[in-house]
Length: 368
Ligand SMILES: Nc1ncnc2c1ncn2[C@@H]1O[C@H](COP(=O)(O)OP(=O)(O)O)[C@@H](O)[C@H]1O
Ligand SMILES: [Mg+2]
Image 1 (cartoon, rainbow, N blue to C red):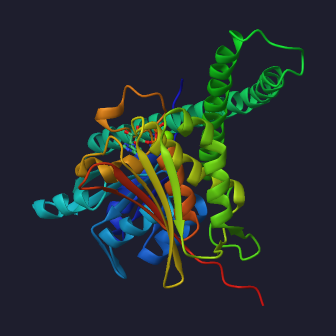
Image 2 (spheres, rainbow, N blue to C red):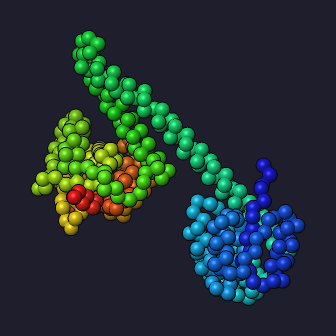
Image 3 (tube, rainbow, N blue to C red):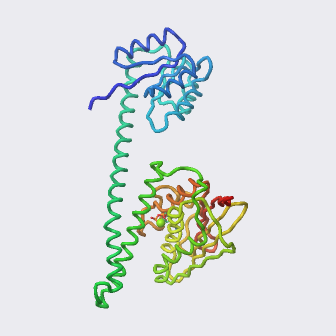
């Protein structure tokens, strides 16, 4: 595949050096733009999106390092190859430049062949990064479509298996009931996984508006009880006791019900999954300084302190529990949802065994 020539922005005041750079790059088929101040460089960078930027060590109004720092903020998801131009012998500048995020450097006065080779290397890297981003987007879209399409037949299966279990199609031989029960549980697990994947995709694509919308309100206490009821068949089967401790009548937060439900269900589901039979799970809701804290405390497997914080990363799973079914997206999604609403998540191993997962959210202001 032929590599398209990227636009090159040159930020330098040294006329002879600029002339030389322009000439060499033009001969190679690159389009060049020249800026003489830091401010101009940033404005034109933002407007014209060049993919290669050559910056002199210092411009009249700004140091090259500062221009680089701002370019990195402006470029967002775009790939940009930045190269410093430095005077001979200033080795410490080269180190500072690369540590400051530059991809390459060139010492003045430069040789035409060296410039061509370095810009070509930059072009190659940009092209590879673009391909990576494209592939990644394609893969994400593919996963989203497949997951989305899985939902409909799964919901149909969930419904028919429920009806079969309830005898809607006639009486079922007794021996079939436990099998059907296992099937229903597997369908529920799959649907929960699908829901997590779809929510993650929504949060990552930026579809979900960031920030707090005062019009969206959900009551936490009732939702916790609803989640407990939904998972009751699973924890009852394991003889696990789940209790809710709250001395608050009701507490409202500005989070969509479905999103908040995913957070609670994921934490509760983990607590049940990683707690052996006959264990205990305790949910608590506490109010402090206009914040509400929900704790999910279990008497389960526990986690290592050094692993605790990492579990909220994408696909993260503790070493001790990799054998258990799961995707490692549940806690990541919890964090994304909670942080998008101005809150925080945490996970603390309990000294007496088990773990406490908690999340904090600002309490919704009462409507006037
Ligand atoms: N209550 C818990 N007790 C012990 N380990 C837990 C608990 N909750 C989560 N973990 C650990 O964190 C990992 C990530 O959890 P999660 O993101 O929900 O993914 P999944 O449940 O799909 O594995 C789990 O695989 C497990 O190693
Ligand atoms: Mg989970």
